[in-house]
Image 1 (cartoon, rainbow, N blue to C red):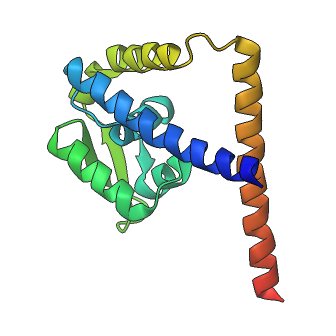
Image 2: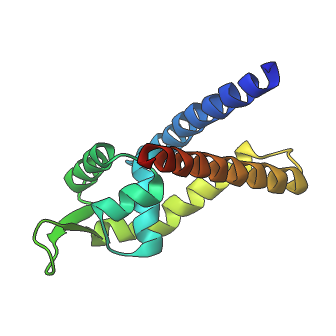
Amino acid sequence: MILVKQAGVYVNILNCRLKKYLSEVFKKNNVNLTAEQYLVMDTLWNEGTLTQQAISFIIQKDKNSVTQFIDNLEKKGLVTRSVSKEDRRVNNIVVTEEGMAMKDTTKQLAIETMNKVLEGVPEADVLTFVSVLKKLCTNISDFGKEQEELALV
């Protein structure tokens, strides 16, 4: 039982520390992004223009948080909102030229930061860690589906 509790506690601690550390590294290197904003930008750099709903789904954050991230990124001139031609209720999020200009250096900085975090951890352990995290995510998704099915009964 204690091991199970420790797993949850350490996943939470890692998440909090990782966001804080990445934000600090960005600040020291004059990258005007928080870790969460980077997650949005990285998603847009990888996927191209997306709706706010799609971003919310991909990064697993609620719509209100994503709206706030996008508001702040828009104030920084890194993204713009564009009303969908198919559905005027939908906003497409587009990376600006300024946002694209910071892509390569910011991604490299994030990679270097993660390499430093993982320093001294054998690659096999990292592969196992990622595999376990994926399994935990699947378990939670499956649990959510079970709860939905029970609610329908």
